[in-house]
Image 1 (tube, rainbow, N blue to C red):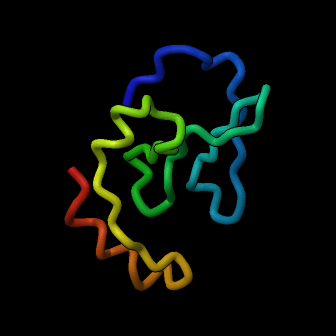
Image 2 (tube, helix red, strand yellow):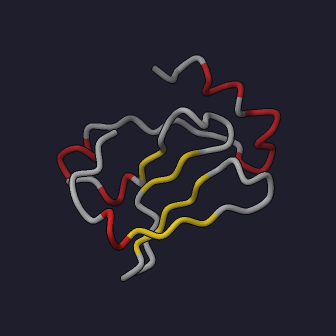
Image 3 (cartoon, helix red, strand yellow):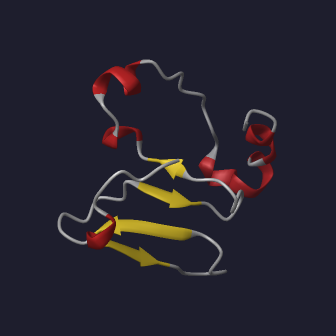
Length: 80
């Protein structure tokens, strides 16, 4: 992950365990990316913030967020 521009307007929020870093645009409030507590050495990107041709090339995999703790292991093997 490489942030190309806009770092000066980003705001960070941490709650709960303080591990996840939620990053928001200080102008419009969108969350373009964040560092998840499940994988603090990685960055999750909001697909809606990507160029359409990039977003259209991605495969969506279902994830049971209601049972997050039990299901987060299911994505660990797919992270590279």
